[in-house]
Image (cartoon, rainbow, N blue to C red; front, side, top):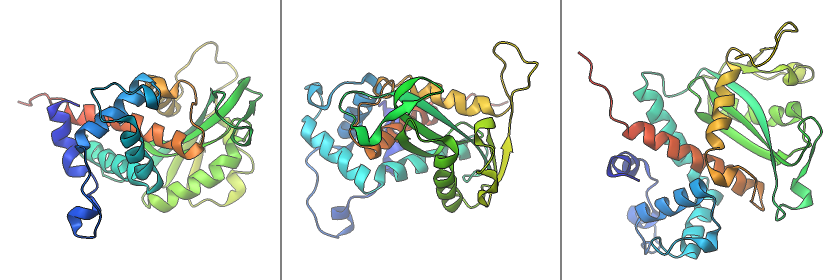
Length: 260
């Protein structure tokens, strides 16, 4: 991280328990060094044991990553950054509309048979990332399943979680794969289907759907996410959140053009 990024990130970090007087021991390594190590791994796709010597020991970095994953701190940190980015863009911190879609990726050999499957539509053996983003393209929630899990089945769970966490959310755009049972599921959201007309030929940018497609393109810039290398789906979801934190910290640290 640059100094400008660290100035934005530091106030948004969760406060350790020992600083609040709730016990525990102070951490041996600076949070900035730990965060840089995790960002390096996600961005470059290295193994945990192949962490460069410039960073803290890999087992200490992984212990930090695992603790934040298990206690939901990675998502909490991500959500704080998202609200900050939305405020900087002149929007309400909580979104009122979103876009949902899924992405199938190949899985590495370490992924067990219990969390992998075959996507017949994309001809991919691996996992599927189901994501809901706001109209700015920032992540609201992600769920990783086996690739053979249908979009409507996963959306029932994911949209219920998103609606409970974001009370202003009222409208969600989706593609034709989310029609059918999902519309009749009784969600407290308006599901707008953006379909591709029969007379369209070649590549056409569809309204609203391009936002979530751009989000998946951002994920592909993180080499750790080009394939699914994680043994558990919880770790795979945490990697997506860490990838988006890099994008948001760079946006927040970007110098703003002066207005006359």
